[in-house]
Length: 151
Image 1: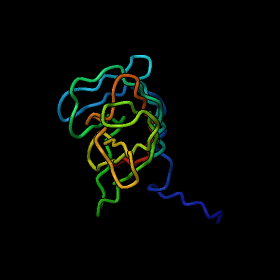
Image 2: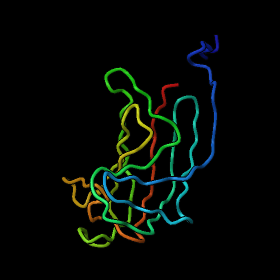
Image 3: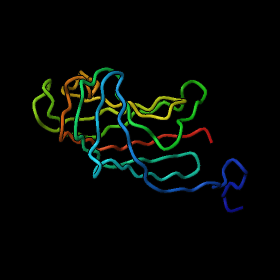
């Protein structure tokens, strides 16, 4: 044969592309996105989803704790946490707890959720919630996330 696997599990059965309004959620307080920089684009092929774009913060109101950005599809829940993923992005930060500049953004995809948790890495050995005084108006997040859905 041709070597192609045409079984149902390996047949391309879904393709979608588009963009959506991103929102940032904090455990406490809020981070508001600039209305001109609040869209993320995505491509979904089968159960694989790629999300990317640039977000710009317009205001913060005492944000603290776990900070997340919504995703267009729920992350799959697989055996032995096979759906967990981490991706690295970049951001420009100018909050009071950090020297203004560009830093790595650690993006953690958690199974069975509809969000990616985002951290800033001011040093190699640290990862901090972006809301904990690390971000302010005009901070920017470059999102680059790949994950799998359940179906």
